[in-house]
Amino acid sequence: MRLLHISDLHAGKSLGRINRNEDLEYALSQVINICKEEKVDVLLIAGDIYDKANPDHESQDMMLDFLTKLHTEGVHTVLIAGNHDSYDLIRSYKHLRRIAHLHVIDRPCKDPKDCILKFGDLTVACLPYPSERLLTHLHENPHRSYTEKVANYLKVLAKHVESARYKVLLAHLMVESAKISGTERQSTVGEFYALKLEHIPECFDYIALGHVHRHQRINRAYYSGSLYQIDFSEKGMEKFANLVILEDELQVKPIKLDIKRELHEIKVGPRENFSEVLERLRGMRGIFKVILTADMRDMSINVKKKQIEEILGDNLVRFEIQPLNQDNGERTYEPQKVDLISAYMDYYEKFLRQKPSKELMEEFIKLLQRAEYETHTA
Ligand SMILES: [Mn+2]
Image (tube, helix red, strand yellow):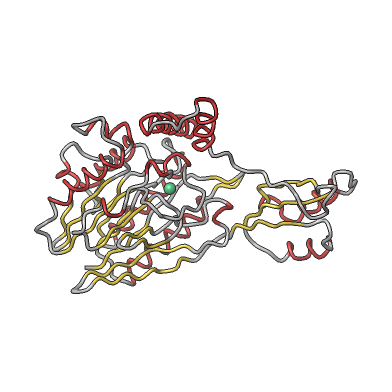
């Protein structure tokens, strides 16, 4: 049995004014070629098909084209929803089952048996992104912690695969000690949401995960990672699809994908030869963020900015000026992303002189997730 594991497609993503669908399309065409060349039986897509809950028409068009092409190639595709996807939109894809080899599990099911798929010797147990709200709704004990509910769900899923020869878990989840890339939604990758590896039942031959964008293996579990560099925190990161061969012994072969447009973060210091910088930029391809460190009294800042803009054109999506610290020629200030979860914990401890309870933090993260979800849907 030959499987290919991919995840985090994020169709419909844009970076500044740049629509990233051509980067994704380039990756997807390679996925189809790998399926052909490696004679893949089943393609596993571990969630985050779309970047937003209400994707634009072009992105949906691209996904339907991809999924039906796989059918034409004789590949069975299993697709689960991620935290960026709308459960309801993904559910509508279930109808395709009637005309294509497409198997869609849109959300964790009331009866976990409905999240099990069989392909000859292979059984795939699916866990689409278990949102806190949905899981509370499904679980008999709403007072259990989030990770306990997930662990419990997995235990029940595992019972249904016992008799199969090859057992695979396909899930959109955060696992403890996974290294994030920084482009995942913040509230969904914190410690409160991280499942311990020992909570994933031992029986699975291969654990195909989505959610974390960095390609990695954590013991028995594999994140295939996003299909292209989503944002600048993924600059320089290589992208992969995992070929999984289930025979007497498990073989996992990461296949490196070509990247259409690399993301570059260019730092220009105050002492650099500026015409050399411009020359270097002229020879580069991809999408750019430029950080110019300069003395704010320097009259040439605007001219420099204009010159950079002229060379990079639309491929320059971010331009930042970092003021040079006067008393220290080198030190510059780094703007930092605010971690709202730790900020809230600090605030609580400072004013109430005690640590917030686990329940309160879960409630806080739930609200944060809702806020993040609603901002991304709007
Ligand atoms: Mn994702």
